[in-house]
Image (cartoon, rainbow, N blue to C red; front, side, top):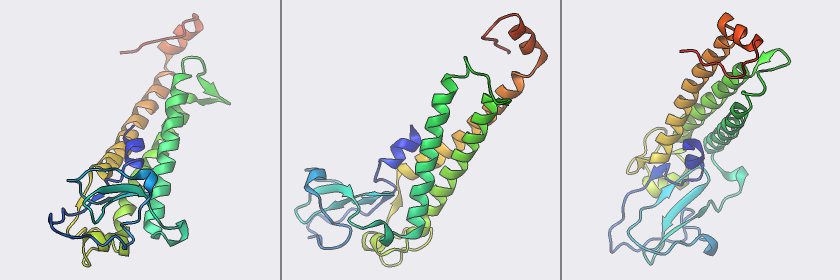
Amino acid sequence: MALLAANLSPSWLIGPTPPADLSLDTTSNTAWTNPLHDTRGSGGVPCLGLWLRCSLLGSGRLHCGVYATTAPHLHPALVSALVGLILATVVSTVTCVAAAFTACIRSIKGWSCFSLISILQVLAGVASIAGTAAFPLSWDSPRVQNMCGDDASFYHPAACVVGWATYAALCGGFLLLVCSCLAFRAAAATKSLPVIDQLHKGHNFVLLI
């Protein structure tokens, strides 16, 4: 859920709050608008995500939508982060679904289901952490510098601050690594003699403490 929320949030990098009397330039590449995603209101701050962004219009309204940029023009580090987070989200979702079937299917072609789940969770965790680490490498792009200042660069957000979505993605990656350790421990437990003995007796669920 943390990875999914991070993917769908623009709050990866939070921009500074502009003065109340500041008239914003709506022609910059961070102020692209789409009426389908227009959110009316005031008091918000601009922010950037992996593929979403929110910008303040000249009227003071906060507008959120997708980047008005084609994929080839996105910063390579941003594309890497997006691919890593999407891969981690998809793989972690697959492991959640697979975990529901471990009560009925214990092995696939000689491989323990828990071992396979553990391997997939390691892959998802590494992809999530790598994607999160790649995101700050895109902070030297014109889009980020327009919002945070000209001195924004790698791992230096200048006037901006790191948003909650970045921390959520990072925590999600580490939690996946923790879950992979638990899945590996479960795989080892299913091969223990007490469990094998109970399975031979026809028991499907065996709890070891």
